[in-house]
Structures are given as C-alpha cells and as structure tokens.
Amino acid sequence: MTKKKPAAAAPTPSKRDAVLAAALGLFSRFGLHGTSVDQVAARAGVSKSNLLYYFANKEELYVSVLRDLLEVWLAPLREFTAEQDPQQAIADYIRRKLVVSRDSPDASRLFCLEMIQGAPLLRDELDRELREIVEHKAAVIQGWIDAGRLAPVDPQHLIFAIWATTQHYADFAVQVQALTGRTLADPAFFEQTVANVQAVVLRGVAPR
Image (cartoon, rainbow, N blue to C red; front, side):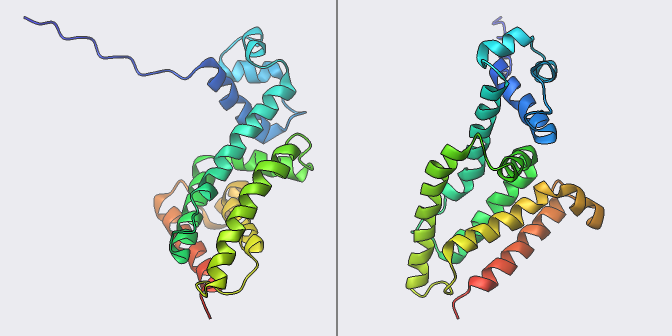
C-alpha cells in the first residue's frame, strides 16, 4: 500500500514582508515620528535586532514602505493603454483604483499623509517615476481627445479627479461609514460606488 505524501505546508510570508506589513499599519495611523522600531517589531512578531537586520533604521524602513505602496498605487494606472476603448479604459481604471482603496486602505492613507507633509522622503520617486507615468498616460488621454473620442478636458486634471474621488473611500473611510453606515468591504456598496463614480466621470468626458 502506497503511503500518501503529507500535504505541503502553505508558504509563510518572510520576516521582511511581516515587518513591512506591520510598519505600513503603524505608519498609516501614527506617521513616521509617532511610530517606534519597537512597536513595529512587536506587531511583526520579530525581535528588534531581527528587524534591524533587514532595515538599518526606522527611516530606511519607512522609505521601503513608501516605495512598496507607490507601486501598489501606480499599478492600476500602468494598465491604462492607448489600444483600449477610452470609455472602457477609464471605467476599468476607476474600478481598479477603488479596489486599491478597498483592499489597501492603509497604503492609501499613508500616501496621503506623506503628500500632506510635503513628501520629504518620497520626492525623488514623485519627480521621476510618478511624473513619467502620469505624463505618458496624459498623452494617451490627449490622443483620445484629439481623435474626438473624449470631450476636450485637461488630461492631468482628469487623472487628479479620479484619484481624489477613488481615494476618498480609503482616506475618509470613517466619514463614509458615518454617513452611509457602509464601507467598501460591503460588496453591494462597493459595486454601487464603482457604478456611481464611473457614471459621474464618464458623463463628464463623453464626446460632445
């Protein structure tokens, strides 16, 4: 009789990933100066010395968290391409941004906090990577406008408006819940939010 092989254990996140996740949760609530290395280590379930093996100091950890969240924040915009139907591309982008607000609210809140503080530790990434991708996607939108496929709006302001609207549901989640009694974690409310934000934006950019 052949013995069954034991089921493979599910992969466990690395200690570094655990530290980054713990740091994101704390930094998004208390900021860089309101969070200590000891707090992050305790929340991640590692020793302080173990944490400092991966990150030399709190500032290095904070910058690593910011770089990771910038990638999460930019990922939906990267999927935006000139080959798509413009209305569908914008609708899909709104949905993806609201998914980020629903699934990664801490990332959205920390990004907002860093912007409010003048982005002292993220400025280089903003001046390079963020500027580059926004300029490229704005050019895609301008191409659609020039072809008469969208109303003549400023592409960058359109992107800003989508950011502001979709991030509201993460950055001001407490306010949204206080006023509606619901959050994006509620599937029906999530779909309702997607549909309404899409309707407002798409009607504004529909060809005249």
